[in-house]
Length: 111
Image (cartoon, rainbow, N blue to C red):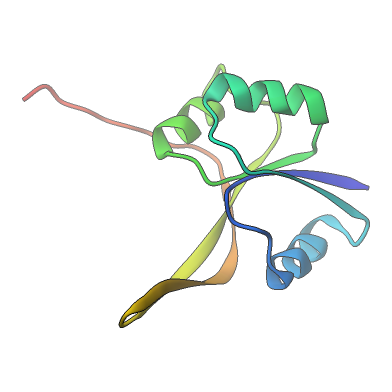
């Protein structure tokens, strides 16, 4: 059985569950954490739940830290969502697919 730790405010949709089962197998446990976290808290949650995969909606700077040399040892995935703007209504997000984050590089320059 694969265990997915989801750190996001957004509940998992049926399309996402189907795709996770396609990728990781039908015997799946999904643990959802809907709280604001920093990198240390993410590592603590990984120690607590011992997941096989982390799915997270986090700032790219934190994703860079988590996938860097001193980061986490499990795969980090992100859901690719398509935005649908609606006049006068909240934006609707449609799941497209999952992305495996292999590396994030932030390059800066003093101005």
